[in-house]
Image (cartoon, rainbow over all chains, first blue to last red; front, side, top):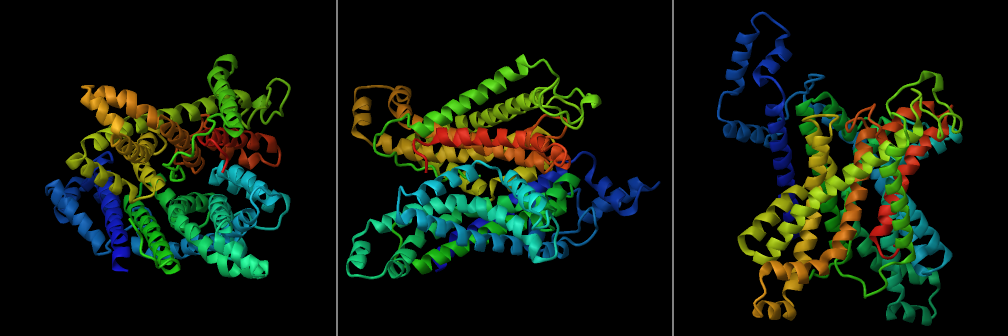
Length: 311
Length: 275
């Protein structure tokens, strides 16, 4: 178990390091004097601005060597001190806590939907390869994979919100607002996972134990439930770890598109406003969310298939 | 943004030009022609406004109509296709050249260099590619520089890993040793024994990389952190035209269809078989 999670812990450390260093460089690379900028933000344009800037420089230690400052700012991240948003002035951690809830709802519903869609389509296609279900799902997967998430989201908005008028096009509050963004993500994920599920079901169908189970007279539903599902699930779940990248990137895009007040939405707006502490905080949380999903998938795979891996 | 569904093991020697790949290549050739010749043949400035022709329907003065500022859609689509194609190609070449060279070096030399490169790749893969691009975009929002740098930084790893893995299996084979014993130099061996073996893999990776780049560039422009209007960028065009969907639905769908066809062509050309 520990051995399973150690690489993920290392990865989490790397996420903090990469985001921390990039944002540190970002603050120094922005035009103008950092101390002057902070002083102007705090006290407004003032006659004594140079003096105030000197005070800020001494207070925040901006005159120390760069490496010391970098170590200091990484230390702050490690103590969960993410600073305050330059735009709203609120502590970052407080803003993140509100947004994380929305993002988790979205990512969670997308995962649930995709686990419902992908494997069922894959099962139908894989039990009879070359049949109409197989060919239709192949066509659907190729088309869905060629649509960027934002185009897919727009098409869903056009269909369900504007033509049919069943669901709201954007917003946040009730479950109906969650359906379209979650469906956008889920369809994109299912386009990939349904083919993995299809291949893995097809390989189970070819095994002797599947033939034997049918020959001894078990009804098809029982064969599928007892013999196919768990064996075919392993590659599909393992593939979810690779899809975590798509999920996290998709969350950023889809939240922005649907005006869904989550972390991805906040990240994009922080980039536009150049709100560096906010960029750092949101990128950290999204990066760590990615690590957590992959770690959860690792554990799930271990539970489904406890045989030790030969690597 | 994953290239992970590219398998390392080449399927049993089969026909290279399968029907789906032929279709994909034809589609790409047509689109490339449109992107290359379109901006030259269509004598229309993609940023010139003509409010008399605002939201003009297809047909008439403008073959595919005009957008809300009266800019010709055909000219904008052609320039947008050239922009997407060009930037994706540039990004992939920038990622592939160092990726392949470092991969060959790592497979050839091994040791310290190999371990350092592996560490660098692990560090870069810790964060999903789009997050890296977004942080870099905060340095200079709305410009191509950070977009290009971030995409190339995430894409080179796949080229490096695949080249390294494929080259090290090739290098272990007896005919390489024989060539070395015959006194052929390293450059010759890499060029005439290793590169031909890994070229099909690199082509597949390149096509997937371009699809990734096209999707990323249009997506980031659509959420207004990538390229900014009035640049004729396909993703930005969709979002710009979206408020006028009720009056001109066809206009909104045209750039979307173009992106779809570009990515579809690349996806079909990348694999020998549809999966």
